[in-house]
Length: 109
Image (cartoon, rainbow, N blue to C red):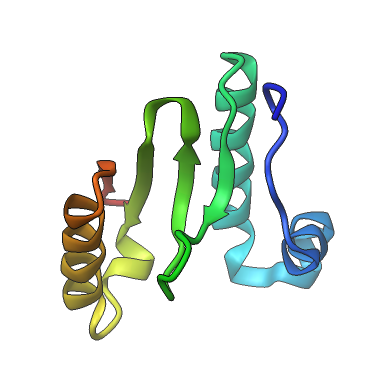
């Protein structure tokens, strides 16, 4: 996969293509995700957005195949919801048990 190319489902294409008014309060989160993609692309890093390991039901924010690295951005909004700490613990354990490197970036905003 060439640098800057990432897998997106049709759902992601629709979400990323929507305008600010259609997304309401989620606009800021969407813009932050797009910025993360632009950074990876500017560095020439091949990545997969919203990566789901084969045989696992949960998604990781980004996957960099060349490094076997999963990246999770833990924002205050999503990670303040009920059950998220347990979900994060499960995802961390899955990554460790299956030989992935995992980078968690904790964003308090």
